[in-house]
Length: 255
Image (cartoon, rainbow, N blue to C red; front, side):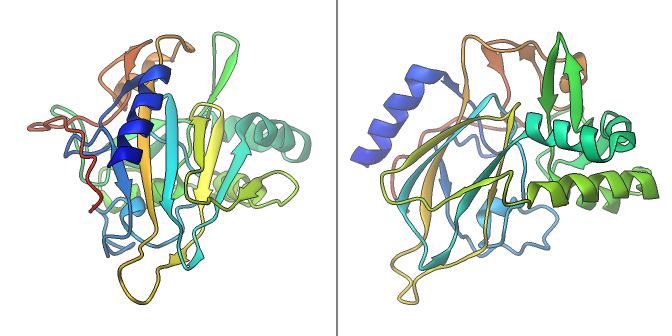
C-alpha cells in the first residue's frame, strides 16, 4: 500500500488520473484474473496472454512493477513516427489506407449514447503533428458486429504490414521490468506491448503491475474524430473510460 500511495503521488505531479475501465479504477492493477483471451468483453490486461502493440485511451500511460512473472511478461515499446517513416520508405501505398478510420471494439465498455465500437485511423495528421492509435486485437474483434463492414484485403495488408514492422528487433525496444521500475509513455506517439507470461506455481506470487492513465494540463490538440472514442478532447480533461454507473475509485490494496 505504501508503494501504491507513492506511485499515485508521482502520477499526480504529471497529470489528472483517468478511469481505466467501466469500474472507474483510477489506480489499475495489471494482474492475471484468468479471463479468457477469446472472451470478446475481456480486456487483455486481465489475462496472461500477449497484449500486442497498442495505444491506451489516454494521453499518458504509466506502469510500476510490484512483482515480475516467473517466465515472460517483458515490456516492449516502439515509436509510431519511426513506423510511419519505415512504411513511407518501404510501402508508401499503404500509408493512405492507414489514414482511413478502422472500426475498433470497445470490449463491452460502452459509454451512454455510443456504439459498441468506435472509428479511428491508425495514422492521423492534425495541426502538423502525427497522432497514432492502434489495437489490432480490438480491430479484429470489432468484426463480430454485423453492422461493422468487413475488412478489405488492402486494409488487412496494411494492418499486417504495420504489425509485422512493430516486430522488427531493430525498431522496437524490449525491457524486463524489475520490482520498483516505472515506465511512463505518451500514447499518441509510442505503442507498447507485453509478452505472454507464466506466474509462479505456488499461486502466491503473481505478476503484478500498477497502472495509471494520466491527462496532463499541456498536450497536443486532437482531431474531432476522437469524440467518437471519448467524451472530450479538451486538453487537461480528456481520455479514460466512463460508462453509465461508473464510480471513480482509488484502490491501493494489493489483491
